[in-house]
Image (cartoon, rainbow, N blue to C red; front, side):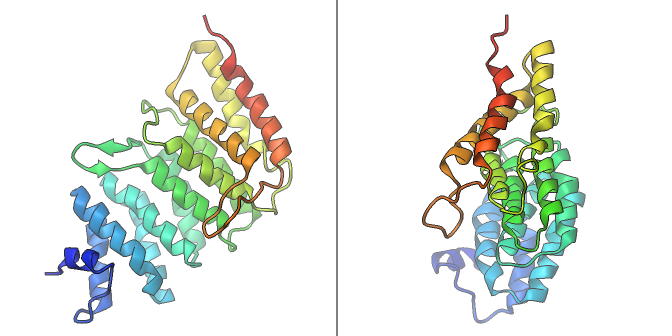
Length: 266
């Protein structure tokens, strides 16, 4: 039996008396545990630290497992922790187009977007998915077409019908992820703003029929994105914010999209 607490206490040092692959297999199982301590404090924290020690073929195999788990696992906690591990893998420089395909299939359609569950602990589908979206957005292997797909997926996640109002900074996490994508210099001015069109329709519906949860979530996220457009984006490892290349036109577009949300109703 692996003493995971001892590994945590020893600052994630890899035990010398066990095959590393065997330990990683155990962690992969812990990542779908309904026990929040085993899944989050143990499984995720240790796996996230150990990803950098994997050889490239092993990172690819782990990524394949997580991608399949996102789309096919029946357990919500398994689906929502898979993107966190994929985030670590992609951030190490390993990428497969199939992982992006799996993310595109899962993220806008995940029905359970609660932040915290009293028994399962943190689920955080929107926030965890946002972290992976941002990692894809910073990956050099992701081309312009895929960047546009990521922006579309982000707005599709926001405008998808839901009854859950963001209550655990999901709006901040998704705005940051979109901002990371928008720092890519390959995007043209039009490409930096055209993806906002679905939000216009969401806010138009709000004016016709009254407030909706998805409109609330969308406006809060886009307001935070405006801040990133204005102040720049502090990327991992950076010491100063990186400007969004088309910040001026993006702020103008965000202002236009958000204007109807300030119209008095009733």
